[in-house]
Length: 333
Ligand SMILES: Cc1cc2nc3c(=O)[nH]c(=O)nc-3n(C[C@H](O)[C@H](O)[C@H](O)COP(=O)(O)OP(=O)(O)OC[C@H]3O[C@@H](n4cnc5c(N)ncnc54)[C@H](O)[C@@H]3O)c2cc1C
Image 1 (cartoon, protein in one colour):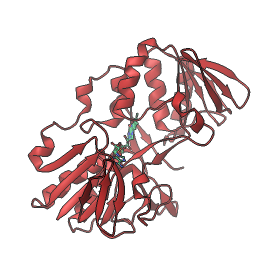
Image 2: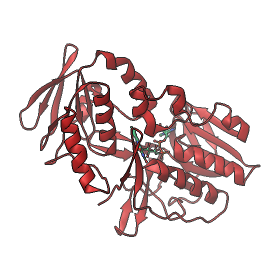
Image 3: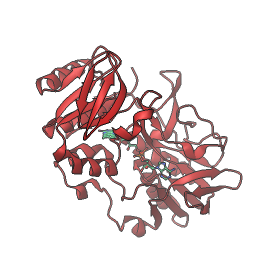
Image 4: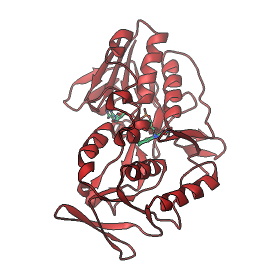
């Protein structure tokens, strides 16, 4: 049996290990488009602030895959899947065949139609590559603008503030909101940020970003004119699933899976941030972002790919690591 995994994040790596444990004779190949060995994405801000060294991000050794008999191909982007031929096509057009396939491609910050034209002026904050580039720039940066919601904005704001930067945070709502279980904690964090000197602009959004010499001129819907040395902005986090185009795999925002994490195409499974699964409380599909969820879904998908029938249960909360402090968060209200 040949198992192919697309994506070397928490979900993909965990699935590879579980598959090999349960089918030692099976051939397992994992493709990841990043050039690094798998790392703890949730600790990227700790690395940005020098609280940990780059080596501490890597949770497996370079020999790990060799030792467990898994082929790991890093820096390899999968551009297409052909379910009829049971094959995938890599960026350089190599074709690889599979018996069972796992899609574990995660998500990414997404820019809507207003921000998209300014993509080249906007800095991403998601991968180790993003942070390595940012770390080099950081000593030359004084003023930062952050526009974007979700827990990663909280992480980024804390990181920039801890690095001594002047930060302006723009939010669309009447106040910054994070999907934390404890609403009082949201208020506390908001007050803390103000106390720490983070300037918060509410009920506004970025409409234009122009480069002026080494700086950026940022215009907002409410006619504010701001300047910054760096701009972080996103409208949303969305699953990164362009490789399923033309496959017939059912999707909404993410790949739709059943409780066994199988997609609408037999033999193709999906796990982690790229997945949308039915939430009985909401009576709708929902994306369960988060590290523990990716680990668990990777394990369940891996077991089911080897012939078991494990069921995934939606969790009500996730643990969010805010620079060493653990917070309970929920992606839905
Ligand atoms: C700054 C930051 C802080 C965070 N903090 C927390 C936290 O405290 N707690 C928490 O629970 N979660 C946190 N998260 C979210 C958490 O990291 C993710 O939920 C988790 O990494 C998802 O794992 P995954 O395996 O589904 O996807 P990912 O980790 O995104 O891995 C998917 C991998 O697949 C690769 N890939 C995508 N498409 C292709 C393709 N076509 N071909 C080959 N490779 C491909 C991607 O480049 C990526 O390497 C944080 C995220 C960030 C950015």
